[in-house]
Length: 115
Image 1 (cartoon, rainbow, N blue to C red):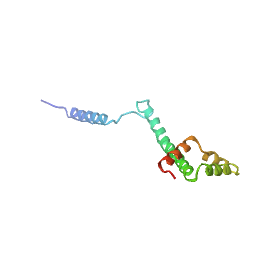
Image 2: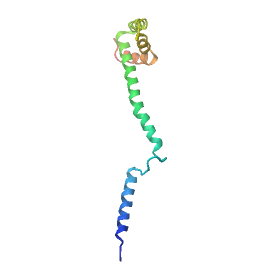
Image 3: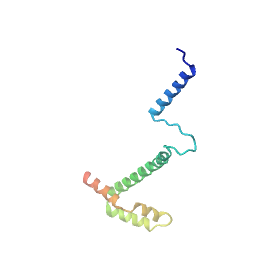
Image 4: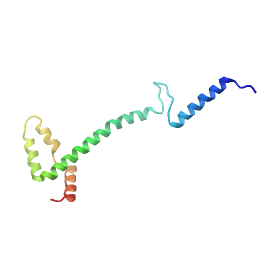
């Protein structure tokens, strides 16, 4: 029986493409609307959101730890003094005010590490 060599080449290419598809690779032309367009923008958003959420959580934890160590009254006095300052001091006071998350973290530390 006679076998065309081009047919073997064709089947080997199809086999490679099927293996790539099984691994999750896709073949889409640039500039077309494909299946991956929606996920790429979501991935970009996650790349930005994760560090921002981490920074926010670290900032809240730091505020809670400071509130626990210096005490509620001293913390409020220092934030009030910062609010009375000039330049960027009122912005710092706004950032450092004792919000519910800060008070919760401070309360958790108080229950874990009583003075």
